[in-house]
Image (cartoon, rainbow, N blue to C red; front, side):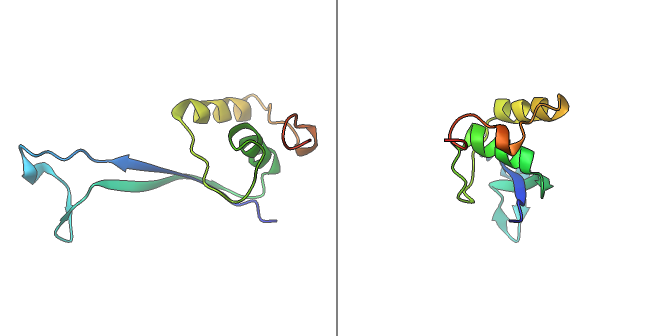
Length: 96
């Protein structure tokens, strides 16, 4: 089990119809957005389990998990406070 996880995001760029020269152009096409990868980690079972249990109903199928800014804040708080539960100590779907 690799436990590779990527934190990705999308930035949508608003089209300026009044001043089209201000729009970002790439290869002759208007850029509508950018994909970002602000984080990547691997082999962190506590963080992996926390995210799966808290934000994916305990279901780990290598699926995308959409996180709101408040969710990211919750993850950061759990990491900073050293309160990520150990994989064997989850309550909820993972331990049922």
